[in-house]
Image 1 (cartoon, helix red, strand yellow):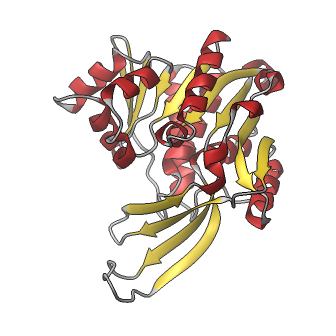
Image 2 (tube, rainbow, N blue to C red):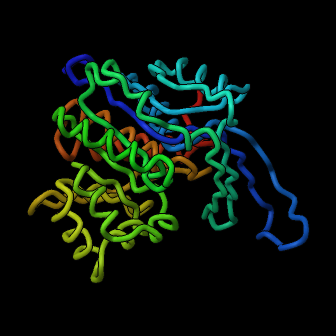
Amino acid sequence: MTQLESGKVLVVGDIMMDVLVTMSSEMIRGSDVPSAVETGFGGTASNVASWLGFQKHPVRLLGVVGDDLWGREIIQNQQEWGVETHVWCNPDLPTGAVVVLNHLDGERSMFPDTRANQTLHRGLFTDEIWEEVSILYISGYTLLNSSTREVAKDIMRVAKSRDIMVVLDPASVGPLQQIEGSELSSWLELCDVILPNELELLALTSEGSTAERLTELSQRVRRVVAKFGAQGCVWVEGDSRVEFSALPSQVVDTVGAGDAFAAGLLAALARQDDVETCLSNATKIASLAVSKRGAQPEKS
């Protein structure tokens, strides 16, 4: 299947700059901790688009940045990866930013400031946005943010009406736990594939073992592809369940690993690959992501 036949992936959601802080010891409240501080491109939607571009899969990114240096650099970076950018530069708000604390045990804590991302609006979704699109990927942050929630749901409805596959990444367990059950149900009704990690799976289901929770979620969403880090991933669809091991990797930085996984899966889904091939490609791209610093691929 050619790239054109496989169709574009339309990626919608947050576009950010990352400020990565790798601490030499755990944070001491009210004092100093010597750290390595780096900046890099980030935001779930932006990360997914860049990893799709890295795979040379046709991708269109839609979102908002500030009309500032960071915003312009982000757009240029995406275009260098071959991403078709439909990114509005808002003159009134700066580009979104997130501070990422890398803890000693590999865990991360994030402090996002959405800024321009909160101004995603319906006027950006013109008919040309849908040309040649076979999959819509929507970042859960766009649903978690109350200012963009209704726009996100609208775009999911339009995709469904056009028989475009809707893929949702729940994004973050903390904000997810604050959403009412009826609202969460309205999101699940609009997606064909959901990509939770272990904690997000717990937030989206009631009680029971991991296997029982996967079954519960798969009764509400056609395909569940759950990510369990070093323990691999699981695809559940109907009565079918496929487990896939993570690839051995020298882990340098886990920032953006889930986004890279999503990009690998999306490219394979768009090609209509079989389940094993989809999971293989997703884990391969994720392993590349964790072997380097930052959330996006490195240019050779």
